Image (cartoon, rainbow, N blue to C red; front, side, top):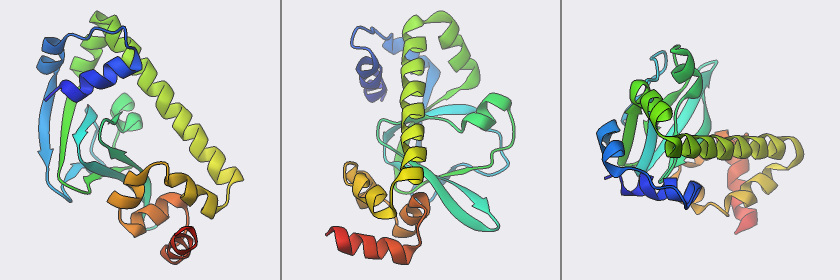
Length: 188
């Protein structure tokens, strides 16, 4: 159950020697069916999540319209950070887009790991750095690239093309579904 998370820890730093028994005691395994909600709007996010297998969509509403912020696929470690850190109502909804297995850790256990284990601090720092780098790349692509360039860049990550709905992908890319269809035809 915890093996993939340990692989991610070692990927962050090959010298890390995580304690499997500690992780097993801190993380709970949860199964989600397709379309099952992991975190709903206006609830407080009390966990960090690791996607063992499957895919999740993270989205928000604006004037009643859904906007996809990102997707979490296999081996992705994340949380709804604003809600988690501030114990505030979530502005996002996280839903499984396919049958999904996650590991989740409570804030209390997360804080205990951070105090007691340097290898966990190292992993969390690495993970946050990677998320920030991806966020910066995403902002830069919206500022400097065309929709076609952004779509073509997704081909480096086939899970986006193969595992998501066109309407969700189009909202993440900031284009209409019609425009996305045209982009797909051009790229093929």
